[in-house]
Image 1 (cartoon, rainbow, N blue to C red):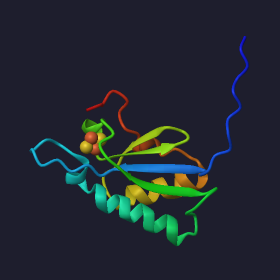
Image 2 (cartoon, helix red, strand yellow):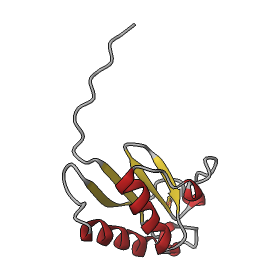
Image 3 (cartoon, rainbow, N blue to C red):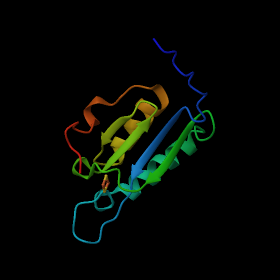
Image 4 (spheres, rainbow, N blue to C red):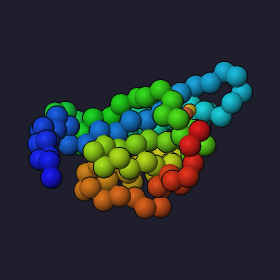
Length: 116
Ligand code: FES
């Protein structure tokens, strides 16, 4: 059996990416479902609570994550948990439950079969 490579220390405790992709060809995209507002709300909440920064939480925008059918989507690492959110209350729940306490918000999990 080969030895596992040791995992380097993590720079952020948790990292959440919001797809904010905007399409102009009429195809479905996260930006048409409030993604920019959700990203901004999440970022503001994390900052307000003093949770932003190295060793803590980072909130980032992303281009298309290729899971548009589940959109709008956000993904949290290191767990690799995908969320489909609807409104800003959902974002608050993701922040309080997952980002702060490490508890996955089951009701907002993106359906695993949904891709692009
Ligand atoms: S447009 Fe958001 S995942 Fe593709």
